[in-house]
Structure formats: C-alpha cells, structure tokens
Amino acid sequence: MGRHDRLLPGLAALASVAGLGVSVYLTVVHYSAIPLVCTSSGAVNCERVLSSGYAVIAGSALPTSAAGIVWFTVSAALAVGQLSGRGVPLLTLLQVAWSALGLVTVLGLVFIEIVMLGTICVWCTAAHALVLATFLLAIAIWQSATESARSMNTRPMRK
Amino acid sequence: MAHKQKGAHSPSKSPPRMSLQQPHKKGTRSMRKPVRRTPGWLPAAATIGAIALLVVAFLAIRWVTTPPAPAPIDSTHAAAVLSTITSLPPSELEQVGLGSAANRLKPVSGPALVGPGGKPLVFYFGAEYCPYCAAERWPIIIALSRFGAFSGLKTTTSSSSDIYANTPTFTFHRATYSSQYIEFQAVETTDRNQNSLDSPTQAQVALVNRFDASGSIPFVDLGNRYAFSGATYAPDSLQGISWQQIADALQQADSVQAKAILGSANLIAAAVCKLTSDQPAEVCSGAAIQSIEAKL
Image (cartoon, rainbow over the protein chains, first blue to last red):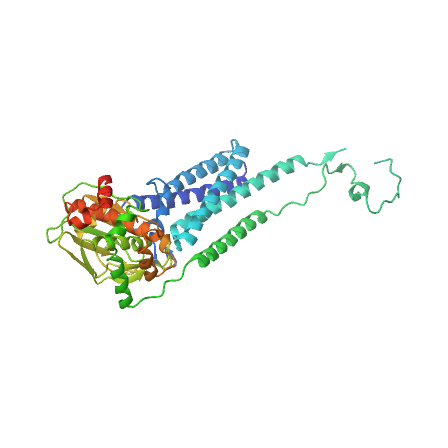
C-alpha cells in the first residue's frame, strides 16, 4: 500500500477518532454534573437538545451519544483495518455500508433537531459532520479501489 | 466484420463503428472501448447537495408546522379561564376518571416531604419554555385547586422554538397557593426565552437530583411518597388553540383535552389524597379517585 493509498483511510481513522472524542464527551456530560460547553440561547442550544426526550435511545436510559461511541469505534476499526492492508476490498465495502447507515441515522437526528425541537446542538452537529466526512472518505476510498481494479484490467495488449 | 463490403452504407441503423474502422497503432490496441468515467468529485458534491436540499426541506417543514402563538389574553379573561377550570363539576371529573392520562407516578421512599407549615408538600420543578411543563400545569392547577386555591397565576406559552411550540399555559412564577391540607412550592427556572427566573434552594436541588436523575422536566414530588417527571399526556392536544378554547373543551368530558387534562388531574388528586389521608372527603371519596388510588 502506497503513501497515497494510505491517505484516505488515515483521514477516515482521524475523523472517527475525533467523532469518538465528541461522543465520549457528550456521554460523560450526560452522566455527570459537568456543565456542557455550549451556548444556550436562540437557534443553537445544546442543553435543550440534550435534555429532550430524543437525547436517549428510545426505550432506554442510554444517551444517543453512546450509540455514537459504538459507531465511531467500528468506523475507526474499519479504517485502521484498511490501513493494515489486509482484506481491503471487504473492509472498503463494509466502510461504505457502515458510513451510509451512519449518514441515514444522522439525517434522522438532524430532522429531530430542526423539525421537532427547532434548535441545533453544535456538539451534535460536529459529530454529524464527522459522520458525513467519514461517508465521503469511504466513497472516495471505494472509488479509488474501483479505479485501481479497472486500470489493472485494461493493460495494453501486445500483438 | 470482414464480410461487410467496404463503403456499404446503412444510414439509420448502423451502430457506430468508428473505432473499428480507424487504423490502430502498430503493435497495441485497447482491450475495451474507452469509458467516460465519473469525475471523482461528483459523488461528494452530489451527497453534499442532497443533504443541503434535505436541510432546506426540514427548515420548510418546521416553518409550515409551527403553530402561531395564541393571541395573548388580558388578566380579566385569564381569570375567567382559571375560574372555569377550577370550578368544573366533580361529576365530570368522575366521568373522565383516568381518561387518557399516562400514570407516570412512581412510589418513592424518603422522609416525608413537608412544607414550612408542617403540611405535606407538593413540589414542582420546571421552566416556562418547556412544553411538557406547559401541558402539566393545567392538571396540576385543576387538581390542587380541589384542595386549596392559587393566586397570582399568569398566562404564558412554551417556547416558540421548541417542540410543541407556543403551548398555552399558566406560569407558577410568583404564584402562591394556600390550602388547609397541603403546601405547594414551585420553581420555574427560566422564562419562555430561557432567561433565568427562580433559583431552587439547596434542598430542592437535592430533591431533584435524588428522584429525577435524568434531569427531565417537569419534575413533581408529592410529599416524597410519589414522584414523576415529564408530562402525563402529550401536549399536542393543546397545539394551535387558545386558553379559552382549552377551558371550553374541559367542560366537555368526552373532548380530547378533557380526557388528557382531567384524567391527569385525577391522577395527581389521587396521589394528594394519599398524602392527606383522603381529606377532604368530597374530593377523595369519589369512585374515580378511589379507583386511581388503588392503582398507585
């Protein structure tokens, strides 16, 4: 695996680690008395979002950010797996599927923030942006892999 | 293709054969026809564009579905509404029973919670912006008015930028309550725009931390025997209607609002009856209250 081939999975791993950090922070704040670093007026109000009924996974006391920890951990593992160079085609496909699942979930959460709550949580938005970045990187990695496979199949034919 | 005569012409049906008819470079030729490849930036641009469109659609949905704030009413009309909802006939409350209320009351243990006057204390913790608090104040006012009397209640609405926006309600901020059976304390932490209002005492904070670990509001503690957080009915039944319309609906036992609000009021009244040893009898001896008490 060349330096260029490592760039995209490396960026995906970085995005996942950053998202993991955000998710861990929100989960710690949920379970402790630590005040959330966020504005609480106008259209941006983390407190309102994170104290709403949508801030926990339906039917449980688990914060939604706990699901974020799981998602970003798996995403980071997939990216690191690609960096190691073993089973790359399968990992690339899994990364695309996993990040697509994450993106659909994010769109649902954004719908809740905008339509149901009418307010935005910047920490959540940061995590959402990292999911989107992971998705775009997964698509780019998949495109790159497809291009490589295609170029191997179209070598010049000698007479 | 060698059987085709050179120069044969079939203008409308012949497939493009340019690549076959052109001379190839000596020694090599491509195995496949050249494919026009998707530019690398296109999937990313399409994804970002689609998400941007979705966000715009979400904003449009929000704008369309947000009901306007009900027109404010003056103190005379507010007093009339309060008079209506606090003098509903007991027979109607009996008829509604638990209605559509969700029994969120949970038995709790701890030293009996009493007020400064030594009577059982009902403690409310909420905020004016909160739509669930807005919804729950209606049954609290109706229930507690059967044991005493409020004064200083003023109309307000929940936040215009939260779920169940602009839910009409009354605020407990600066309201007082007197009763020979119980005492009532309320903390409204912020107004509908989230500006600070009441500060809870250390004892009140301890109470909230002890029985409302999730921090959900409204939180109501009934004498440390029962507590609940959240609303006992969905605020959607109050959307887009005025205080007067709610008061009118509460006079009809089969209305959606009566089933929700009066059912919730009966639930709270039954819990209070547990604190007062079923006093006063005219409130606590009713079949509906007794039936709910048996379930608590």
